[in-house]
Length: 138
Image 1 (tube, rainbow, N blue to C red):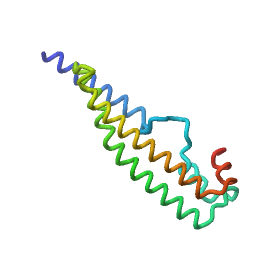
Image 2 (cartoon, one colour):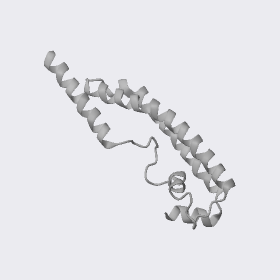
Image 3 (cartoon, rainbow, N blue to C red):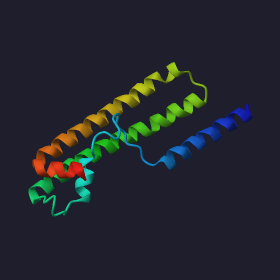
């Protein structure tokens, strides 16, 4: 019994280290296919080619802050649930016992994806067509 518990603890620690080394994971359902416009814009805030005016900057900052705040809150909910699923399956839980947790994680990731979609849409409305094309190409 002691050896089994020790092995479970070691496995849990190894998984935690693996997650920590992997860096922050985006909490979205669709990965690598949609741009993170406000991040790109922030990196090019004073780029003369982008030529953002002050009104655009105010609007873009509001969109970014709202998006980051909402996604951060969801990540705080997702991460512990993911760890719980990983820990429980390694401890011998049956997949059907984890179904509700997986559904809960999926729901939060769906919410985060919808926030990302809204961010892209709202950001695109603030930019001129030329600015949008430039940001997409950066």
